[in-house]
Image (cartoon, rainbow, N blue to C red; front, side, top):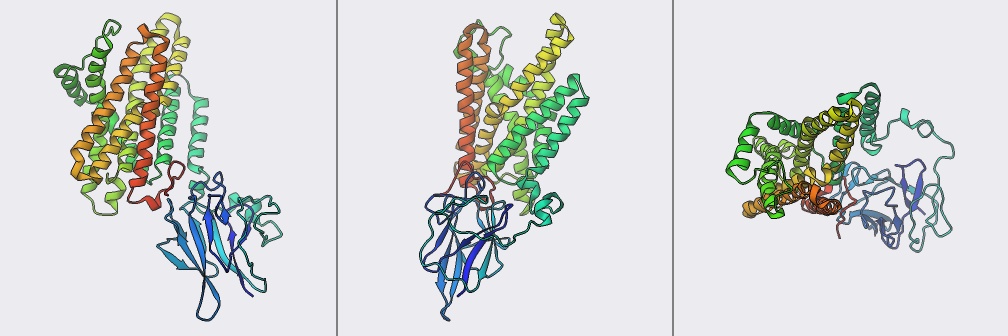
Length: 452
């Protein structure tokens, strides 16, 4: 009698799972599944990702249907996204998510079929207990690809093994050994800012060309370096009540907030949103699929491009203004070495704090821009909500720092609260954006949201 089974081939060891002839086998991370995949190893797999259902053919034999269970990242059969259910044939390759575990559907002959469902099992290639689904190793000897995997590059190595980020890290580390002074701080700041942006990119889970993100950051830096900035400053800080005096300790908190709301919040959030509007207009000039690749058609696009713009803004503001000013001021009083050290101490928290600061406010506004494109009937209300709320949090952050000399340690607590709220707002926007995404089945991130 023939017996069907799945063979896991995307890990070092090969594990086989028997398929049932009397009931379906559900695959996922939920403990109720018949084949349980560990979330630590297979994060792209949904809680109940897919099912394999036995079906009796007119000839009296058993065939098996693979069905996706509305998973977050999709089920792929022989490299093609699965729509509905499809019959399996010997040798078919099943992948759960674009970068998830890969199985091969196979038959073994002259093996008695199982008469009852197997108990749930958490996938571990190294050990299986007495209550786990049985597995068989198809090869007793290690192959060359197993002993020297780098010589046999597995599929999607650059994504699965984070090869490119690792190589970039090695390059920056080597360069940091051979430079010093302000160039050292530029390289370190660029690496930390890039890591923060990569973190948001992974959370969003949508493939967006990196040249689009880099162009967004460069565009923002060019605006800040151009005479156009003076025009914006004149409007927001002279015509509008956004001018903040040098001595903020004598100003009431309400007045200080209003000044920062106009002079920092509205001004800077508008500047950082310009690349998002720019790529939206640029995308409209192209037909599909280029329009979706570079344009802004959904909230995830807005978050990614706005976050990249915020990265450029932070680099320019930190490395172009704050750090050089601090170095010069401290060096004048305590010497050059103390100045470089003070600059480094300022650089690291400012860049790392970008995720809960500029990137969070811009990402939230970018979400609203993308949502207004997706829901045009309420577009202006959505834009106004995103712009004013992002500027409000920005102004509140600056107001707290402006009172640091008078409120002391209390300011630290206020900044933690404001920064935490800002990051939570960005996180909530990413989760909702992934749920709303028209391309959700191709999304490669899974940790923050699963479909019910």
